[in-house]
Picture 1: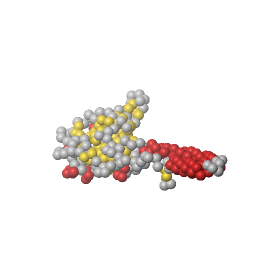
Picture 2 (picture 1 turned 90 degrees about the horizontal axis):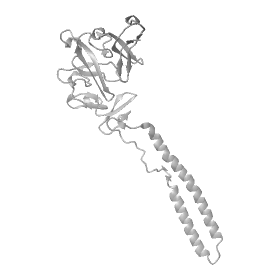
Picture 3 (picture 1 turned 135 degrees about the vertical axis):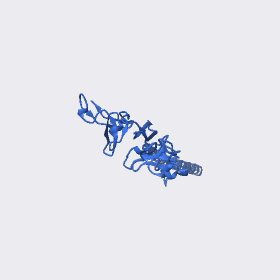
Picture 4 (picture 1 turned 90 degrees about the vertical axis):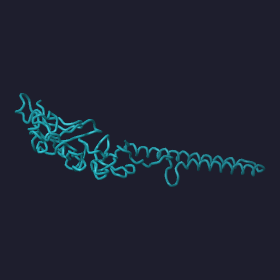
Length: 280
């Protein structure tokens, strides 16, 4: 992954060095030329031709040397011997636009916040209608398997549905190939509940799965606007992320009255997953 912060420093450092070299070389040139003139003035008449030849040779040599030294910086700008072009990003490298990625790669992520150089930006970029999913640190074309991102049912494997697991307000794709997309797809009174697994920040999978009522454990997702309380072992309450995202999370309590002692601490969303409400 590139570190864009260091690029300006790497470009500025050679310029400062070049400026210092120009200053030093300019002073040396002036001293050498004065010394050449003094030598020529003190020579005898008989040695004038020889001395002038020597002086001219010395002056030319000095001039050539100082000119070469001065050309560490050309008239057109500094020449550091280093390229200032940033190489195109490879798979998984951070980016802001497609132009920052290598050929045949696209920049996929949150608009305005940046993303990663990836193989696809959506399902239509993948062959044979397969799905574009986040896997291994970048977006790649998947096989429509359970838990992979999707945009429609046709990009998921047989008998799977492309269901919304997390509502991210359109900022990011929260749809995954799932066992069900609604309770009607489940048998024997089971409920279609959202599930997300954070294996690590490079591998995130999710789905909707059929579960028995009251079996979703604390800290797991639930449908706060639907059958969330029926899905959870405890209570389904809403966790808020900076006012942008609200998700239902199973927890111990809904109000202070649900706690034997203390107060009900609200559910939270973190980088490593979800935390349901707790009595504290």
